[in-house]
Image (cartoon, rainbow over all chains, first blue to last red; front, side):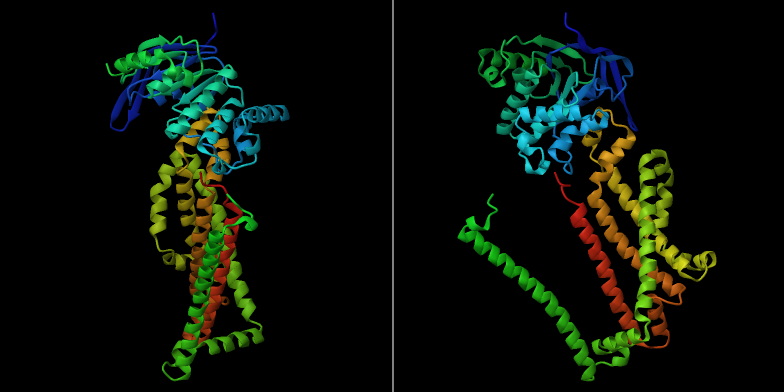
Length: 244
Length: 271
């Protein structure tokens, strides 16, 4: 039995505004085990980003508990690299924030960057990099402090289609090779199928788990998955469940 | 992209040449405009179209400058005004920036003080003239105080609004890394508002000159503002014009210093 990294137990969250309150999620329960890649899809406006904030501990649930073992690495829609920092300085940012920037940690992070082809860009500023390279740098920044779980908030949705397929391929490969646990939140069904071990389908607001599927491709490569006959079968099923 | 001039295509060389020519045209027109204006001014007083007693003339301004220099008072007056302006400017920027940081830090404080700042911004500071004289006396202290008063509110408002415009996603990212408020301030809020800081400085330069000259109008025994007021009272319009021209040059010089600072400070702020 693998260790649980993230557990949501009967979580409820209420959003307060001047005009009133909104129940973003209620009775939400799920678990993610070590090494798993889980994708969450849901109808738009079901508060997906809210779930990630809960998972990261940035929001406290109104009811229920969120238990997380270890640290998180958060990746957003845009790379959010700081334009006034070089790529190297950007990658070292989380270590700097967490006061873990020893010379060893620095070397470790730089090695990771070099391993994934960022060596020649370490001294460059983000504006000098292509969209795909920037997203890769953002991933290395996320991985640098050695997080126990990656929270991915539609990290590819800001890219154009061509770049998006390439970056998905790229990022998925890196996450698999580094044996990271990941929770991906997306509205893109095919992205979820091409990346995850398990897909959780959420209901509309208040968000709850409607279905959960182990995909069982026996294949981690996103592009090869897209060519697999099972792909369209899953797509059809998830499409129906999402629109139910 | 090619950067080596040896490899440039003919088209690119032509494009560069055109660009240079255009720049030369703009600059020669700029200088030409000034020269034409001065020439017209000089001629109109010499040919009797305008009364040099009322409008002065470039040659009379030159003569006034020379006599002020000969008396040894030119740099004295410039020094007085420049010192008041620079001290007032520096104090307004430092104090205003610190207050803006404090208001960013404390949400409660900001919301409590917001209406007061808005009202103080709208208040014409010259209305405080008599109060300032009574509080600070009739020396340079009063003028520096006026300069700070005129500048500080603008500095606070400009800086604070820049701090508050910090990108929400970058804030979220830093918080997810476990950053505290202090780290968010030093790693994100201050560096991301560098461009706004410079544009704030540009506004503050203008405000400081307004403040110091206004201050000298109310109370002073020296300085360019004093020369202007004195010249007006004794109907020496040559003196008024001369002081104004010197003021123009100084204000421009200070503005260009800020532009220079911008070139050094504001790199890599765009995504």
